[in-house]
Amino acid sequence: MTINAHNRLLMTGAAGGLGQAMRGRLKANCAVLRLSDRAEFGPAHSHEEIMLADLADADAVLATMHGVDAVVHFGGISVEGPFGPILQANILGVYNLYEAARKQGTKRIVFASSNHVTGYYRQSETITADHAPRPDGLYGVSKAFGEDLSRFYYDRYGIETACVRIGSSFPEPKDRRMLASWLSYDDLHRLITACLTTPVLGHSIIFGMSNNSVTWWDNARARHVGYAPQDSSDVFREAVFARTPAPDASDPAVQFQGGGFVKAGPFPFTG
Ligand SMILES: NC(=O)c1ccc[n+]([C@@H]2O[C@H](COP(=O)([O-])OP(=O)(O)OC[C@H]3O[C@@H](n4cnc5c(N)ncnc54)[C@H](O)[C@@H]3O)[C@@H](O)[C@H]2O)c1
Image (tube, helix red, strand yellow):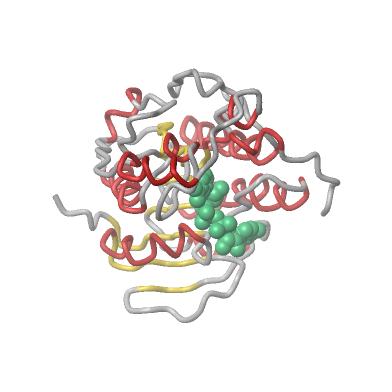
């Protein structure tokens, strides 16, 4: 199967952790990879274009969408914090992105949603895409907004979206919680590739996780996408247990899927 399914692919958040990790990998998915962020991140390499834009700037976002066939949307505030920046980047920003897609005729988006949309489910529960959102903070609420907005743009305008509720995508799981939530970079690329190439994506909510033995999420509702993870946190399990203290079962960060996010804030509003 060829994974080079698009001519020009836009990746937002290109200066960030996942943007940097996916930059090289996503070049296999397109003829031209257009990279965007509000922060500088150096020169373009071969088969790349760089267009800096603040997601809160509708005109700038519209310009980045010109000639784009599909989007991987990583840009935005990626942790819990004051509402002002979340409002600008994750709420106004995702609206600007979908409006730009509508105006430019872009029909497929992979939206980096988050496990924090459902962070207030307990670690003892297994949830599916049919469970209602239970965000664990303002960041999670902003991702839930993005999921609802993308649903509307699919129903009204036919723009297909994969809302990938990324667990913890880092080189290795850093703590015991991440043994359940870990998503390797290669599996993230496999998941994005599945979302970009499946003939019919529709509007899909997919938990972004590797093939971990311990899991809180059931991806049965997303089988049509064809994502088959090949990595597992299990190989890190012993080492993580050895270097981290036994969890305190009365700690909300241990009880709820969102971990430490359930204890973050409140933050004063900053614009
Ligand atoms: N890494 C994970 O495990 C994880 C887990 C869940 C969800 N996610 C989501 O995946 C995406 C990428 O995560 P990451 O770990 O690379 O985050 P990151 O914070 O490293 O990168 C986010 C990028 O977005 C850019 N950005 C922020 N505000 C912006 C704005 N207003 N306009 C334009 N660009 C802006 C930042 O400059 C940064 O380069 C985020 O949307 C995050 O919420 C990541």
